[in-house]
Image 1 (cartoon, one colour):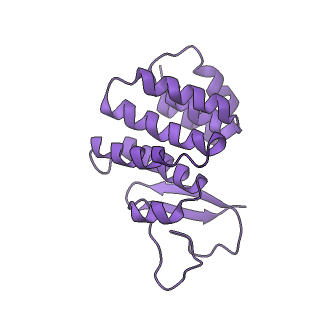
Image 2 (cartoon, rainbow, N blue to C red):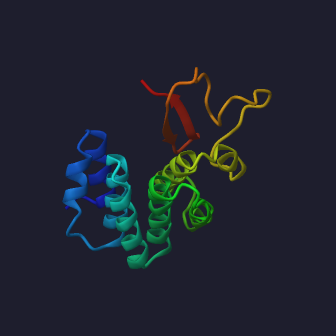
Length: 168
């Protein structure tokens, strides 16, 4: 059986987020519930995302599960309660439970960065060390080389951190 992390990411990247969410409905472990929350967020089903993230948080038994659940909860609240920014800060603090440069930490870092962006907290994301701000250009968002006022899609590279690219 494929892990909930890789299973969900594979389906979401393939444009099958709804299938990813359905595949995890009967799974009760925290990681599966967190990834279901991610899939629901991707689909714009923010209430369902929040519910799944809450269930993930209550069923988390390890620091790593808790960090993932906090990250998906922070992301989910961007759609339901965008002013609830404490979750972003708490999710960043939970990243300390991971060794640097692991795929799991990169995924959680990505989710936290997306949550911070979705909560319109670019400055806080930079201050927390999730992104970087280019000096000398106050209109430039963290990590954006050339945005031309287009929508942004977040990407993460475990070696370089968060990178934002112009969406198409």
